[in-house]
Length: 184
Image 1 (tube, rainbow, N blue to C red):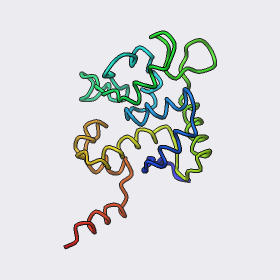
Image 2 (cartoon, helix red, strand yellow):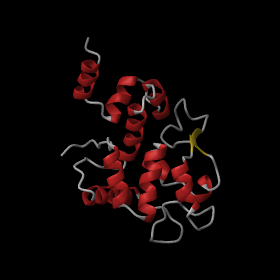
Image 3 (cartoon, one colour):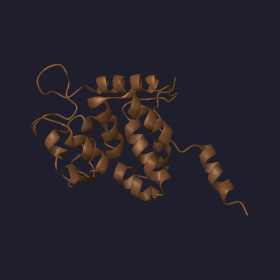
């Protein structure tokens, strides 16, 4: 078994995951793939961070001590996420991904892992799934839609384009296909 996790690389995989999830768990997947945040940052989101807003402003925990620390990351809230948020009841201080244990506590990282893995199994996907799968899927989607690798690198806080390509799972075969596409 690999100790790295994969992105969901096709629309079909993403749709199958969405169909395998419901309620809070579906929202976790949708927001994760839409925002590209680490699970530690996703789990801290509260309803008031997103409700009625066009952008999320967040200082990511892992980058708090790096060159990105002085500026929050500004993330556009997609129409899909906004519609899902509008369906929710609750107070602005309520965690978006509430645990069913205790009052207003977020689910744990372990629970998020279990949710994503169980959904992938129900969806019949043969993918190494983990909490970073949603973040990697976000990066893969950007790359696959023609967003420049240096922009993706900046979003992720990576130091080199090679690091970003490896992170989102660009394989040697995919690089070979790119060369074949321009054969004259």
